[in-house]
Amino acid sequence: MKFSRLIFANLFRKKIRLALTLGSFAVALFLFAFLAVVKKAFTGGADLANASRLVTINRVSIINPLPLSYRDKIAAIPGVEFVTHNNWFGGVYQDERNFFPQFAIDTENQRKVFPEFVVPDDQWNTFLKDRQGAVVGARTAKRFGWKVGDRIPIKAPAYGGGAAWEFNIDGIYHGRRAGDDESQFWFQWDYFEERMPANFKGLAGWYTVKLKSPDDALRVAKAIDADFANSPYETKTDTESAFAASWVKQFGNIEFLIMTIGSVVFFTLLLVTGNTMAISVRERTGELGVLKAIGFKDGTVLLLVLAEALAIASVGGLLGLGLAFLAIPSLSAALNGLLPVLVLSRSAIAGGIGFSLLVGAASGILPGIGAMRLRVVTALRRV
Amino acid sequence: MVSVNNNGHSSALIQVRGLNKTYRRGGEQIQVLQGLNLDVDKSDFVGFMGPSGSGKTTLLNLLGGLDVPTAGHISVAGDEITHMSSGRLTEWRARHVGLVFQMYNLIPVLTAYQNVELPLLLTGLSKAQRRQHVETALSIVGLADRLHHFPRQLSGGQEQRVAIARAIVSDPTFLLCDEPTGDLDRKSADEIMALIEELVAKHNKTVLMVTHDPLVAARAHTVLHLEKGVLVEASKSRQNVVAGGAA
Image 1 (cartoon, helix red, strand yellow):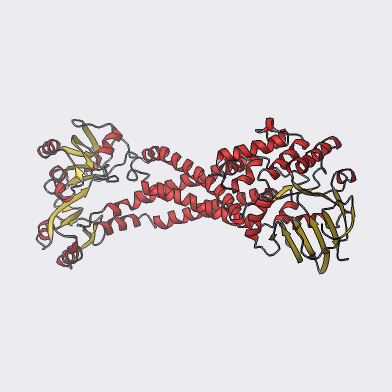
Image 2 (cartoon, rainbow over the protein chains, first blue to last red):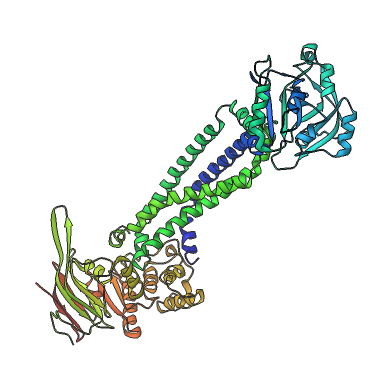
């Protein structure tokens, strides 16, 4: 572009101001990227949810259990392909800060209902034969340096007075898709049931139902809840996506919170950069008058100002996104598994670039129009 | 040859007929130029003198298409510019007018080369062609060795030379110089005037110059006096400049 040298020279006219404006963009885009990954971490479950799966919990709350006898009744409902049940363990490995989710699983149906979690067959077979066996997600294994063959003690404050349960790591699973939760720890239902106090036996935390067709979701959900209506353990069945969304809602309206913070960032950045561009243009009124006097058209002057604003926005934005890309894995690790893995997705990067360009264009447009409308004679008087 | 107070057709390069310019300041109307006529032929060098507020710069702005008259007509090389749209006038200015200002008006963040190149960015010339034109223009003004100097690294006289190079680089039809020596010492002023004379004599440029300095004005072929918006006197008149006013 013929005018690139002029744009570049104008950008570097006030180096400290340029650095501060770039810094504003970088910080804002870093925050934007961070908010985007946190939002994704909260809502990603709903995005990744399988349309062919339903989750059945106790109508009162997920804390309340359901009888194990429901399994066969649910499996008998037309449209149901498989049913599996899980229970929350809530154990502590070494320190309470080392949080990761642990589930007692139904080994017969786990892999049929959750095919996205891949365990090598030899490891799975070892697990099936080992009453104290466990399969752990790759992320958690990496976090604690576990490998197949390790023996892990996990204290169970909720069951058995907090005594340590011993587990053998028999396998490590991986998710098929980016974002699949690789933090879970599975162990055998039989081991769980064996060590449960008597009043916990014969109860499941929740059921996950794999449907033959996603088109049956509403009908089957209604059928399940109808079957157990007016019983001591009434059920509430939702699609996995709706269940994940309602789970997130327990933390409050995260999306609204993130949108609010994002909007504040957007408008603050817009005001800062808009003011900077306005000052920058006002300082150069005389020079803009000279450009127009020697033949630069109004539209060209507008484009020059816009190009400066967009250049600052692009560089500052990419800087912020680059910093976020480097920092987010560390932030994710620092969260100690409180959130699923934080991933700066391509769509978040594209959104960040779009956000930068939008703010850049918005901050440059008014000063640009002002420059465009300058009368040459008036501008030249300000030299 | 054009007659004094000509208000009819002529073959002059620049023809001004019945030019009026009125400003409104508060509730008051100020008539800066009053029915001014002027014919200037190619390769002439006209100096405009007059007290402050007499309308010299306003006349220059109107001739250069930087401002529009309240009434009257300006024709340059057959182009009637008074009725042009703002966009067309800008294009016309880029092709036909070279501007030299008292304060040089260089872009401080660009080198001499880049400042001179600015008008050429609006043309379809290639980078190599632009380089050739810029180097030629800077050679004409004697600054071929200062291509990559920034304005702050040049003396006032050198800055004005760069400004003149910028004015001539696109080979315009005429040059408008508004107090070109107003900010210079006598020696530098002499050098700049020698350069402008050379542009007229060697390169056949037409120059219209506003000045307060009688010594500078004396270098022009013709000196016209503006008083209260009217061209009241023509001195050192040669055969190809005829001026007058309605008053």
